[in-house]
Length: 256
Image (cartoon, rainbow, N blue to C red; front, side, top):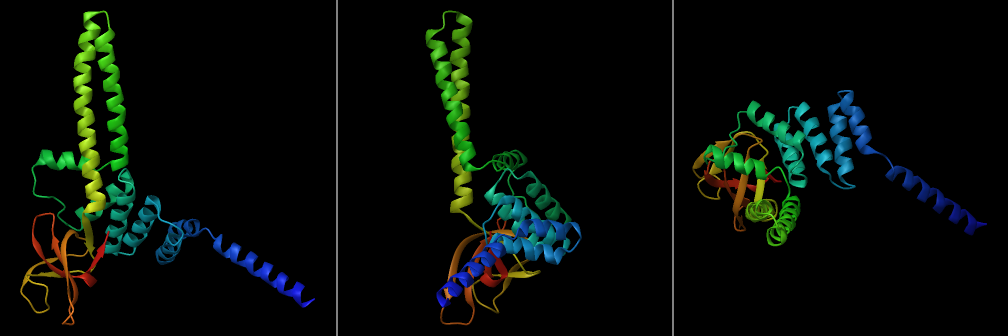
């Protein structure tokens, strides 16, 4: 009898756990957001992240934080949404909107053409660019075959020049794939999480401030140091999109 009771209680516990884990936190977050309960929406979305990330979930979380006037966490989640899926146009639009509203400079100091080209490349992931490059390469081989076996002069010219054009486009797509791979996996970016965050000349408290950044600013982490013999903790050397460099405390930043 005791053995059966233990089995019964175990089954009840498993069933209860399964029901609890089956809660759709994303749906609850969406409902809370629709009812303008933005704090609850953030809580539900954060819980949903424990089961796995997605670009849409990060986008929703960014929206909820923005409604709470938390610019830093809004930017952080939009950036993470784009890191997962660079083709998420909604996240890209909202990120640009928040930066423009906050008057955060996101230009790299390059000319208009190169900035436009970089922005265009960033709309697709490295895997997508690699697939495009492969598809263009296959089309190039088809054009070469057309040039070699076609009877008419017009078809031969079309195949010849088409192969050249497709080959160039394939190389450009391949270069874009390498660029996005390096951009998303090899380069470390972070978001400033506190307002008026100081960037020092050296990684120590009390040192001269080189400049101050508002919350929500995106920076690149180029180096780090841990002051083991001091109470300063870990510092990151950061570089802004306008090529300014300085040292910031790890606690003031959140990696994307």
